[in-house]
Length: 365
Ligand SMILES: Cc1ncc(COP(=O)(O)O)c(C=O)c1O
Image (cartoon, rainbow, N blue to C red; front, side, top):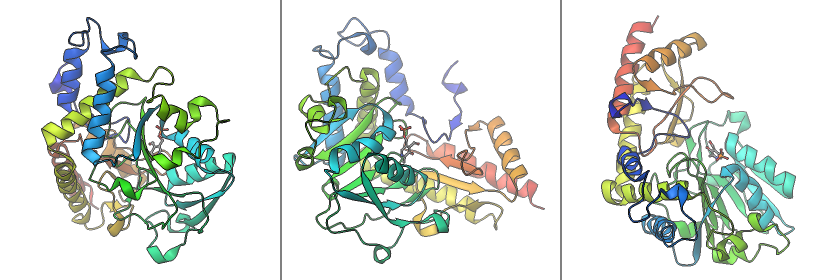
């Protein structure tokens, strides 16, 4: 197998990784320079691993301009564990407010209610989760423990362009599918997190950026591995961290910094790719129908449908043969979905658009 066997992979996650990152990992797979062993075979407490985890953290801080009063944590358990850890650590006997804009914030809301008390202040279910709410459509309770949003609903393809104002209530954000897709102002958030397997690296590590004062909410009785404060004090090494995944985060963040040139540049590229794909949908005269309302369209995940389920299937199977893979929609909603994360090259999106034009021409009744 060689690089020429690689397809354009539109998977929602685990997703495509930048080719230079995979090449570098391959180069160092047998032997990390100076270590005499691979990164998977050395102690996480060794002098060899220290610069890897510290380098990954420095790169995250540089890319997002993370203020000094925030901790950057590398955790395990995926984004789903954060659905529980957030209320376990931050509720402190109070109630939290959730904005339910799609499948993932809905799941986070129901998990929070397993742990304590959470209210939904807006739920887009009756609108088929096609958009997020406007600022005047909901209100946070002034004494809420935190306000929760999902910045990009991976399944419905709905993304926040601007984040809600929460006054003094800490804003908590699941950014799993749009982390690093554009610059953000971290100081607007109390906590922002993302699983890695879309835009940050491989599955196995979850990034959490948390404001220092919120660590004080972590009750000493919370089991250690679920306790943000204890994890922060141990610099994410309370136990063995996912060393290889963290090493990959370091490589991906190096790629973003040095090959791409930072998040402003990444954002410009992402907007260009998304515009290409949405244009292909919009110029099809209704043959392709996007799920999200135009104003809220995600630049990372693009769910769409064809006129029938039969055509959806035909599209997917022919696209697959053309080297455009993993275009099936999430099992809960069907249709198709193209995830065009940071590592999807513009050529891949252009090829998909050409295929879409062709397919529509041949299959329009
Ligand atoms: C927005 C969002 N949140 C949470 C998750 C769950 O992530 P994990 O599988 O790492 O628990 C996903 C996964 O697709 C997601 O897209």
